[in-house]
Image (cartoon, rainbow, N blue to C red; front, side):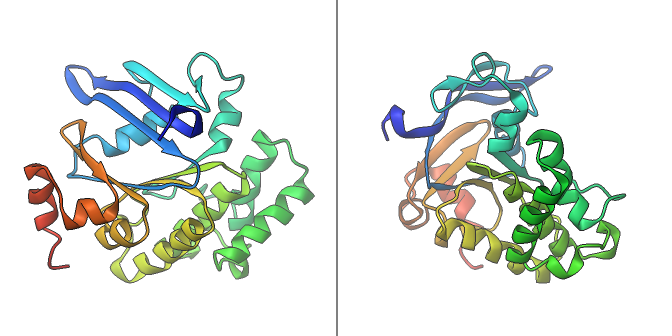
Length: 248
């Protein structure tokens, strides 16, 4: 992959919390239309890397480039950048005091300065797409975890992002609800959405992603196509990690 078609590029990305080095020099590029599955044990730095990309965490050292521009020093608006790089969280992060519709319109109105009417039209389009239009007036407490996550995906899509970051989007869900969220994500992948997905769902990583990145102890240990990583991993750490999932 050449630099000029990278949507996001990480250069020497490091993040420390006190004396704990969580990221130890990450170099990675993501091209338009890629679906990058980021796998690894808990504590390997996967979620921290995503949070740095979205500047929810400030990198200790290194650079994050967005279409070649340093996101910490060269972009004009952090709000616009975050709108372009949407994030779907493990715990949904919906506003409990707002309805499903309001959760999806508020960011559009605040960040994109859309009118209420325009924001509602966009929100309804995406809520319909994820099968949540019948729940417009429900509050988060009235819907299931899988439904909350589908609302969160609709909310992110309503911002018209160029890239979507998913931070373990199914790990807080009951097993029977995982499939409905993965189905939405698979549809987005088929439509060409650029996605970075931190996940423990190995079948999704194997069957849907275009590239798999295995992280271990704060570094990228190995990356390649799903066929390469799942079919013929080169590093012993990768083999050991994947051996746990062979029988799933």
